[in-house]
Image (cartoon, rainbow, N blue to C red; front, side, top):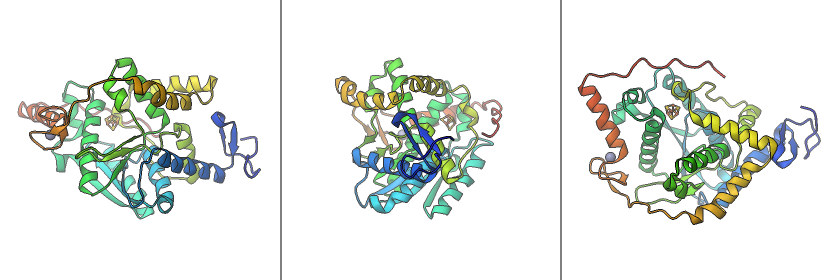
Amino acid sequence: MAGRCKVCGAPAYARLEYANLQLCRGDFVRFFERRVERTVERYGMFERGSEVAVALSGGKNSVALLHSLWKLRERLGIELVAITIDLGIAGHSDRYVPLAKRVCEKLGVACRVVNLEGEYGVAVDELRGLRRPICSLCGVVKRYVLNREARELGAHVLATGHNLDDFLVTLLQAYIRGDLRTLAKLKPYLPPEGKLVARAKPLVETPERDVALYVEALGLEHVGWKCPYSRGATSFEYKRVLDLLEGEHPSIKFQMLRSFPEKVQPLIKVEVPNLTPCSRCSEPSSSPLCQFCRIREEVAKLRGRGLKAGAPPSLEGSG
Ligand code: SF4
Ligand code: ZN
């Protein structure tokens, strides 16, 4: 890349249009980690002495999150543990689970691997037989398991790798659906509530492109292929649209991130149902039977009828 680092004058590694800034590899890495630290402080995500559980899928976001928090752990005064869910996706889980374990081993971070089928009685491959889109069901399953596991590990906060682009995609999708409940709850940090562990998104002020540059700068091993069910996911289209906008108006993503909680969210008035224990599993739920238990019930019915989902979709190539 032509140009020089604004900090030290070395050849530039990254050009950040939104900040009109070019940085060499080392200064970019420091810039990235300082921003994670500032985000954590701005939203009061962790207290000193917090045990932070990082949801680790092995994808670039969660690897960058774990790595940056690991480097910041002493400054922030936190302890780290990782949670990886073996979702039971043929040809996918058996590749990312060992990778996630290797990432943790390298950093000396304890990794709790949850076997969804063995421990919770359901595998994501089985959800193809149900009527809702598989990614939405998988999302319910992951939220349920991560919260429960984080709590059982004694973690104070569950940190996820959602970046700025992910946050804005959720915002746009909820807006288009008129999903006021999601809009009201969409925050970089949610405090604990009963059996719900606090949830934090320390990469919420980090654009997706910067995450890719960070893992590349440090040569961090991460999943370089896509989940077979991600094909056709509308989030990719939303991200393309956001990138188009950003190309014409650098920093528009940051403007959206700031204006939404300051100006729009306070005006959203929506009744949030009280959470009560699920009648089956006792986890917090807004209905008598929680969504996870309902999914399990439907899978059991499918099994009872001897129905199996079709052949798994083929994996996309690496890259
Ligand atoms: Fe789950 Fe869909 Fe993500 Fe695959 S792409 S891990 S099915 S949410
Ligand atoms: Zn339940």
